[in-house]
Image (cartoon, rainbow, N blue to C red; front, side, top):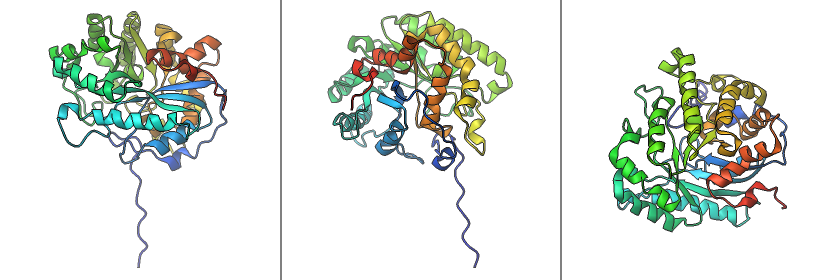
Length: 359
């Protein structure tokens, strides 16, 4: 009798399931660089997919050796209510994230404060009614809800347009979307903008229409270097760079720097037999990181993990080592902003998260 064949693993990082190969990640070990530097991660998710990323996985990455003091949870269509008015089903995600935050706030898991800020999903195409949904989110997490994200990332190419539930084309220009968007500033809620780089001019138009609303650009503006953009790489990068510099001229805009180790960004590290080290990643990411920081300055830039999607390509220890290598020549004030201070200001988090823990 023949022995059963070993079941092959899914391919790493293929949307929408985004398989994380922990065995592969474990092949790379590094010492932690600058282990006492406080970090506030302004962008991660929690979900139950092919590779679950829930409290145990988050805790493991918080305890990766870097001094991660706090995090911001960003919506990902997770843990929605199964029943009730569909317009309010996303409130279930805020309830879940707030519960995780409460468990960390108890101190049971140590001094870190995960989900200290929460960015929720509200369907802004509900127009004026979106305000009622915002109010319900605020009732569920009044001390932690800090922003709203309605993902707008759309592209005509399936290789690029990889969201589980892609939005309609030109969402940011939609009249009802903008009617809902107009309610954000009333509650001091930020807007997290997730778009691909060809959509950045539409985001600029939105920002100019609502200068009183704080907009935070996710994943360095979603530079797409796969599909048709891979064939015109230089042109795509130039277009992205122009848009990033134009956005930076708007004082109400900030940027999250990350998302470079994904298939969208054309990274090939993810398919290698051995995972990359932080030196390799720093060399690869340097032009994009420097473009963002030169445009926005450290006071409006923040490093993000974007875990678990970016965990498909490197471990938490390697990721934060990479950012630390990239800022080796920066001043102490600039580093403090990039790793914690900007995130604290952007999401109105406790200033204590930017300080070294005493426990």
